[in-house]
Amino acid sequence: MDKKAIDWSNLGFGYIQTDQRFVAQYKNGAWKEGGLTEDATVRISECAGVLQYAQTCFEGLKAFTTKKGNVVLFRPDLNGERMEESARRLEMPVFPKEKFVEAVRQVAEANQAYVPPYGSGASLYIRPYMFGSDAVIGVKPSEEYEFRVFATPVGPYFKGGAKPISLRVCDYDRAAPHGTGHVKAGLNYAMSLYAIMDAHKQGYDENLYLDAATRTKVEETGGANFLFVTEDGRLVTPKSPTILPSITRRSLLYVAREYLGMEVEEREVLLEEVESFAECGLCGTAAVISPVGKITDHGKEILFRSGMEKMGPVLQKLYDTLEGIRLEEIPAPEGWICKV
Ligand code: PLP
Ligand code: COI
Image (cartoon, rainbow, N blue to C red):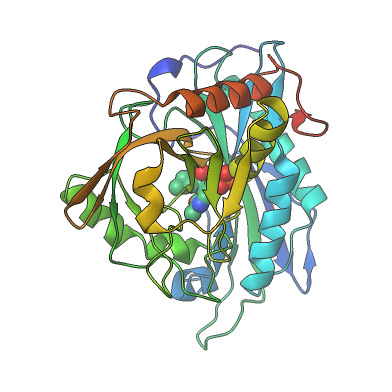
């Protein structure tokens, strides 16, 4: 398979249109079979549920070219499960996870020329999404939906690649108690845009959100979960019912324990204890592990020992091990790697 002429190593996190995408429609209470199309546009009612009341959810996962030359997906079944959860919470019909995995596989296969080569550091980002497509003017669920999957080659999520980023403790909230913070609803991201633009204006890369109820506990950022490393080398990550259950985080906890023999703690993390940690990072599909060098809490600066130049040694080891597994350099746990 000839690859496209793309400067893989200098890709940012942006949209590049690829050749094929998957579309399935839901009508009269059932999903139609669906299939691939070259048409990259969507045509829906001006009164569609997604346009009026933001009835939409999405997923994000990646395909890689491995050392063995295979194109693989990383744990797509978990994205399929999470999308089922998102759909239920948003009163949307569930797109079954087995069909989800098959649609994702078809899109990766059809766009193989856009899967960055092994060693480039880039990957093919795959975006499954679903939205209410028929007219609703009263506030109620749509009756018709589209499930779609497109793919686009990407590099690092944060500008500057692997350089540590700086965060500020945010005065806006991301998720309410008993709200939608634990699912991947488009609305969670729409309401974060003001806060992220404000953070950028103030010179920060991202926001650290606190729990809305007490504003004492670390939640997550707009698009990734937190990882902390203690002075004695334990991995700590916030547990909260209002954060997105990151698949990267779940995988890293396993890797830390089973591959690196580390102690791991998934628990409430108080803002006031953050200054005691040696390393901090963000984890997610887009973020992979992005090191955090500094957190500013209303003028008070918390500088991690690992500094603003490179990732701390423990997070680096975790990063290398996870990437090694995904790129078939290191044996993967059963079921983690799905060949396209
Ligand atoms: N938290 C939020 C708010 C996200 O949008 C994402 C990205 O999907 C994550 C965490 C990381 O989740 P995952 O590792 O499954 O990509
Ligand atoms: C992902 O990591 O897949 C996400 O959806 C996060 C988003 C901020 C790009």
